[in-house]
Length: 85
Image 1 (cartoon, one colour):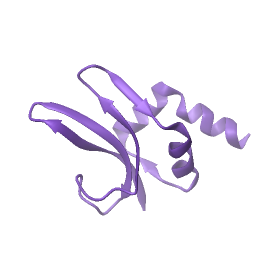
Image 2 (cartoon, rainbow, N blue to C red):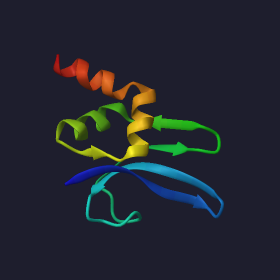
Image 3 (spheres, rainbow, N blue to C red):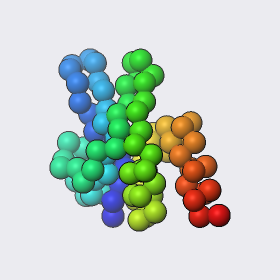
Image 4 (cartoon, one colour):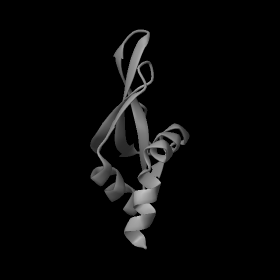
């Protein structure tokens, strides 16, 4: 099963996260299928590649809890529902 999750990058004590599609059995730093953006919790910056995210959601990928909240704030699920109605 494919999951959408955060992959940790950056220096010690200054974490920045990449938003990636990855096999659910892989570890956090494992090989990803696709990079779809980044999230910087320190500066509250987020970049999302919406078409790639929608593609993986259509295929049945499951976002983690944190990504679900990020996508909800960005309106990704609104666009996902709108695409099918």
